[in-house]
Image 1 (spheres, rainbow, N blue to C red):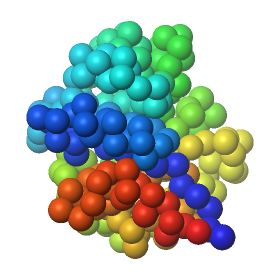
Image 2: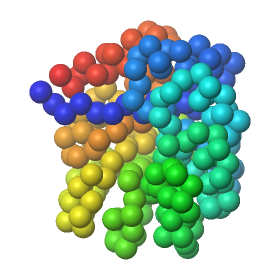
Image 3: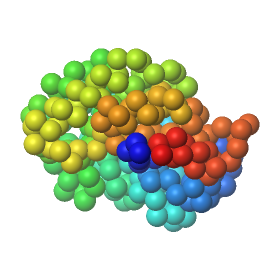
Image 4: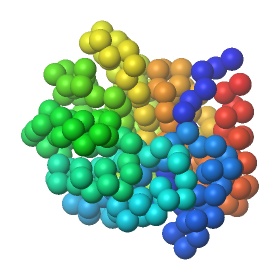
Amino acid sequence: MQKQPLIAASLICSDPLDLSSDINELIIGKADYIHFDVMDGQFVPRYGLYPEILTALKKKCDIPVDVHMMVENPEDFIDDFKIAGAEYYNFHIESTAHAHRIIKKVEKSGMKPGVALNPATPLTTLKYIISDIKMVVLMAINPGIVGHKLIPNMIDKIRDLREFATVNGNEDLIIQIDGGVTFESGKAMIDAGADMLVCGTGTIYRPHEDTISNKIKAFRETFK
């Protein structure tokens, strides 16, 4: 039996005009996490979700939320997303010269700190903070672009990150893969050492095929 992944449903892939129904589907499907993309139009070339949506979401369900901060100034929004109800606060290492300071501010807020890495960003950028973080979001596509295909050598990067975390004393690190997750690629990602897969239009958000909850169930079946 293959290792079962944690499923993080990408909320930005939901129907913005029927968000409540899609959240009900995530509850029925027992999604493990909700992945909450925040984008400022500068760090990435599009806009994303905002804290008020998260506040409303947390009133409706208790699924834990990891926020993915694709913004130029992630330090400025820590309090906003703590108040809104996020459990994990993942910021891009490329967006700041003060990663350690942000990590400590996130910890102080009560959220769990994590770091996101673009495809070309080397794992060595984590060397002096790896013991301080709970999650790494590995981008398997270029961030901010929905629907792009997996960059093939990202499978090797997953394997390298798992080894890097273990060698540096963080065996409990959650490795989350964002982008390029499909029914086919998910297996390779988990085998390489990933723990959590961000599921979007390539897996569970496919209304022309089935409901979100049924697609979650079908995706999980591929790992049995």
